[in-house]
Image 1: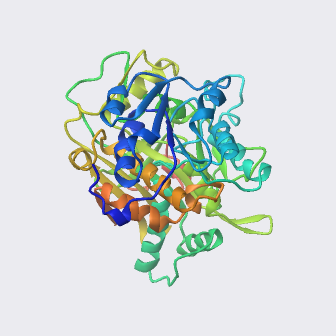
Image 2: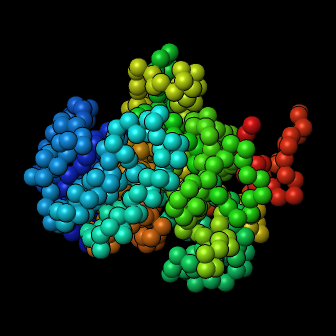
Length: 474
């Protein structure tokens, strides 16, 4: 089924286990078979439900329905993985840390698209908001670097976002440097990337995404509809809103909180992300209100771009997600909030029923000499369907990032715990670009103060438009 030149197919001689087989698993399977020299008989899917069985059978891949839990995951996975094999974790409610440690013990490679806890921990009322945050999950994962001295590559949080967007940020920084006359070599280290961001004057970075995909089937009462995992969206939407906190900020949110341990690169708000809105901008949509849903890149990017002098932080941008999902997902969120965050009984994933639309996913870098710059992918549903079966525009941006991460791990098999910012952005984009539709780099004079105060006076900071206070919708 491959139309990829033979010299571009990644050589992989091991077995692969895919944990979870929802929309992302179903969408990534044909990509893996296309770009890796792996036969279907060397792939096993381990999932919690029957959904996706027909798609697995279409490709001749073994399909095992066996939900992974704390008490059984070792016995289920033990016979399926050994040294040189690969576990691709696309599940929800399965501990990423447990799987990472298991893979290390077996000498197997690992990749996930977000750091997941065991079931129920996102919404456990006995755990503090800080303990339920992505910040805490990331700190726990990074602690494995101190617990073990090296190991096979374990890539954390490499989907579209988190994941692909971190590579977009690096490309955007180079674009801005070129357009504003800032001479620079391509940075080779974390500190060099942070210095470049500081030299350019980057104050705020939004992961700015607008999904316009639509279906002729209306949302029903008591139904959550989305273009990607309903459980994943609800889970992260019910976590506290989180953002990397920049050094230029001078108005700490009234409902803001700092973490008592770790790097201190991020804060959280005393409210869920699914009830927190921010102003942002994309080239096709223009200005919009998006949701500040917690995501790993808000924390890892802010940490990566931090400059320190000894123990003192000298520079860090504010980083957060600004997500406007498809229209029926907006209605679903509204209903979810009204039911005090109890998820609807019925769930529907829009895939084959989508009639039109696109997913505009990119990064908006603000504060530099040209104001604002958005760089990213504008992928239509028509283009996604033409490129890869079992995908919509949203899922393909994720699945190609999974593919790129898998190939990078195979090419770099002994990097142990690895975040997206620590990978070769040019290699990842080389693999992903053919599947991302129209790649856009667009400058704008938009700020969150544009046309503000026309109807009602607001409490804004007019001296610095890039303050979080100005972005937040209250």
